[in-house]
Length: 109
View 1 (tube, rainbow, N blue to C red):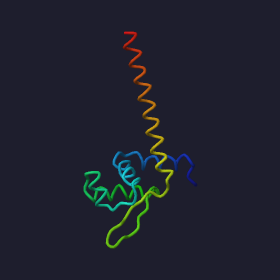
View 2 (view 1 turned 45 degrees about the vertical axis):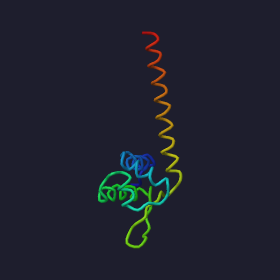
View 3 (view 1 turned 60 degrees about the vertical axis):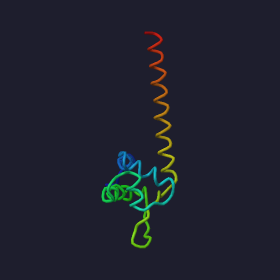
View 4 (view 1 turned 45 degrees about the horizontal axis):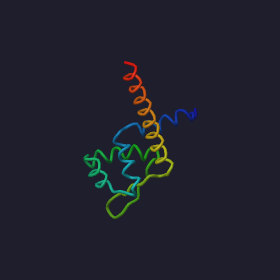
């Protein structure tokens, strides 16, 4: 049985539903990075970063190529960056709405 589009979307969202993986994607926006560079930026052990990168690779969110003895990772599609931007825009709008609600409550209280 083939997967539905909703299953595929859920798998993609699941890969992005971890703060460390989002941080890795954020770091990769600056350009290709080696695992040790990502480990330094995220303050995690290289083994942990590699585990997260494996999940991102499995969902085709990042790709890797060899540079000598090391792998260099990059985002596969700039639309992935846009997805992150859209999530931040939604968060900013939600924060503004909460702020307005709190102001209204304080004025009425």
